[in-house]
Amino acid sequence: MGAPPISLVIDDLGIYYDASRPSRLETILTEIDLDAAGIDGAGSLLTKLRGARLSKYTPPVPRRDFGRDYVVVVDQTRGDASIRGAGAGSRDFARMLAAARSENPGKQIIVKSHPDVLAGRKSGHFDSGDLKEAEHFLIDDVNPWDLLDHAAAVYTVSSQLGYEAILAGAPVRVFGQSFYSGWGLTADETRPLRRDRQLTVTELFSGAHMQYPIYYDPWRDRLCGLATAIAVLQAERDSEQPASDTTGEVFAGVRMWKRRAVAGFRPRLPRRPRFADDVAAAKRIAKAEERQAWFWAAKAPLSAVKGLPNTGFVEDGFLRSLGLGAKLHEPASLVFDRRGIYFDPSGPSDLEDLIAKAAAGGGDCRRAAALREQIVASRLTKYNVGSRPDAAGSAVPLGRKVLLVPGQVEDDASILRGCGRIRTNQGLLTAARHANPNAWLIYKPHPDVEAGLRTGAIDPITAALADEIAMQTSADALLGRADEVWTLTSLMGFEALLRGKSVTCLGAPFYAGWGLTTDLGPAVPRRVAKPALDDLVWAALIAYPKYRDPLTGLPCGPELIVERFSSGIATRQATALSRLQGLFAGYSRIWR
Image 1: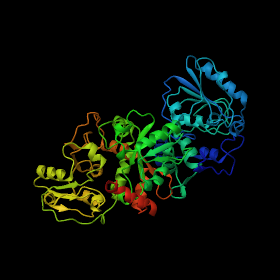
Image 2: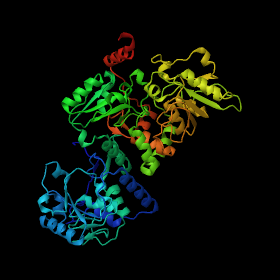
Image 3: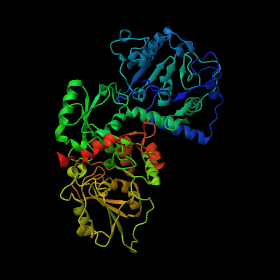
Image 4: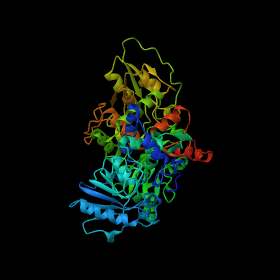
């Protein structure tokens, strides 16, 4: 609530909801003439809008199934200008309900209340007393697309929901003179006399959504088109918490230097997030103040909170920063997982569900493919550290396969929870050399280990198994040289998949077990789906994380993060005081 609009209409002739005189929108629709490219472009954006399930009012609520064979009657607020502009009044609402009943015998009638009525700000034309026993007065927040997708018919006076019903493909009966009536797409009680042209749904959408409004891009501070506006609204909607969670949140295990960043991902809750140092304290706060409890996943095993209601886990996302977390660079993405966490295969996670959903056709493969290509072209990885992306390595003898072995922080939670017998960098390097005696083997130490911030260094004898030790080299440069990657659970395995490389896993990272990798680590019997690569990309990089623009602080999508990182726009580093706290916390194993 209270967010500024990202679209306006500037009409020099009238206004779209007043049918008593022509408007600029009416003129656009009267004269519209789309060529093949225009039809394709409008159709693509309509598909995008429907896929994003965006509407004038799009509350962050779970999807609902209203079944089949029902009729929607749309209520509006009393005194609304669009009712007067449509030449209608209160009696038309009574006529509309009577017509819906007489024209649809045996079908359920659902009367949809207006969001402002639900919020208590205005009154509508119907209440539950106006309905018969079998009819339903819908007073809950609902995504309009859920209601419209399978409606047998939609009855309206002049609500924009009637227009959205046309976009959804539902038959529409109109009892006023709305901007979308009179074009041959609706059954009209009173047809505007000036409108004598037959439009297609695509033409109506192009005029009303693409040509009439002016859109503003708050990320780049400039005017934009509908495609960018959809991305902005989708990111804003996806950043919202469902209504059941808006009492507030408490986070456990988040270090002081990172708390500002975490709070920035939850901007619209009525109470500011609270932070606790441990699981026990978070439990007490959550219970006393009726807050959602989130636990920093690396510090809270699933067993510590198993069975607790209203809890979840939070961690850094996969497009994180221009710099290391260990050097206190704030994250540009976080994941909030209610079931588990992506790096712990001992139990299910929301990410596993999303991967299975995508494999069943529930993802957006087009968007995922475009994002994957954008990431690869921009040469980005999780941290984006190291030397120049084009830094050359040693010359590889002709005919030898290049095998990249990324080292990891050995006390990292993904290794502690996701590996079997082999769980050290020395074990990984030894296994890779044993299985590939003739390969040119490049070993890349983890950046945090190189920086002396975490454990995982290998001894000189094991290091001699590698043909090349890649120090201070960007992950992208090494992935470009590699034919194959061998890893325990490193995200570089996923980044190798994005670049079309073969990947062998000795642990059970989130991207293993789906048929996209060679798996030599622990089996995860739950992972039976067979996603394509872009199904995995959609789940892991689009649907699972939340993103925050490092420049504006606004919610955004991964595409903008790639754009920002490619331009050198980095997330903030912690303040001096928080840096000191982070430093001491990093060495707590010494002084505790």
